[in-house]
Amino acid sequence: MSAVSVAKSDAPYQARSLYRSLLRQSRQFAAYNFREYAKRRSRDAFREHQVEADARRVQELIQKGLKELQVMKVREIFATLVDLESGWEGVEGGGWPIRGFYSIKTLRL
Image (cartoon, rainbow, N blue to C red; front, top):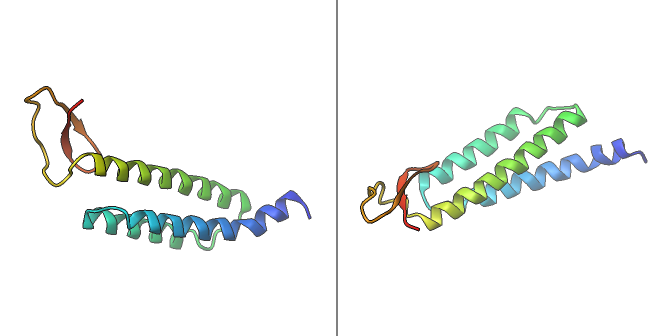
């Protein structure tokens, strides 16, 4: 068995594993809109590329998906550290205004 055939046979498993991980991570968001957006975006991306036949392109897409998974994890951690529901607090009291993915919030150091 060559390395290319091993990579081809492993790609469907990697893709399914990545898909499940993305959906699992999307369930971690507390805010409904972010949770649903992450699920919808993951499903749409996999549907768009489900007929991809080029092994190299499939590996590129899997790598891109892994990067997106890491971004989702960081965003979820950020969301737990910063209360996104309260919105903007301003910079009184020495806080630093942070423009994040979700909202504007003051992070106090």
